[in-house]
Image 1 (tube, helix red, strand yellow):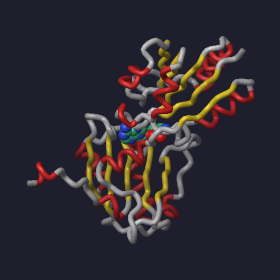
Image 2 (cartoon, protein in one colour; image 1 turned 180 degrees about the horizontal axis):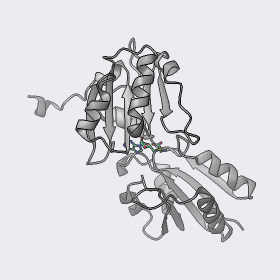
Image 3 (spheres, protein in one colour; image 1 turned 120 degrees about the vertical axis):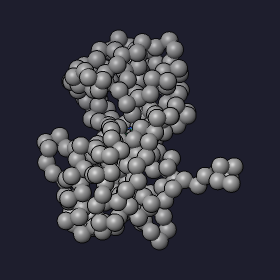
Length: 245
Ligand code: SAH
């Protein structure tokens, strides 16, 4: 009998932002295959599982996707319960559905488990409401990085009137800024750049569209970070009473 693969979102980093469903899946896992944006502290929920790191950072070359596929399949065919743990949500720039399709084609059952995606967690954690009555009627989640290196239509994105939440944007600040300005977005449009959202080392840099590149450079902004661009990005977390007094 084949085992099953759970494609689980680990949330943005803070272990307390894990879902109960994710904790349950980890508790019954024989093998956990972990991506590098996943906080290792989360592994406390699977003390007996074999942990296989398949991450792409830390100076290592990326683990080829084909290898990850084959490894999941091998464990599943051994009848194991496999958890494939991914940062954020498995289906937001996470290849969760590609992996589920591939497993199905090879006769292995899988189940997707939501995680809180970094863009939503980062904004809310900094007091930024991505939607706000009368200010922002929607949110657009977009990646600045494309597989074929094609350029996004930033000019069109400038026209949506929604809050933009940009993943994988740190190395593309010039393109983003130029494209949005060319699309007619106001130079003074607020921007929040949030690094390591939800982790103790979280840092946030507030800026405006026209200054965002210079400010990010002065701040030494590093990946992983999300960018929030829109009127709401000027909002800040309300300080607890004791601190604001
Ligand atoms: N599936 C993930 C996204 C993976 S793509 C999710 O739903 O969150 C990787 C990108 O996600 C990073 O380049 C960065 O833009 C963003 N990201 C992931 N974790 C982050 C974090 N803790 N803080 C800020 N950005 C993060």
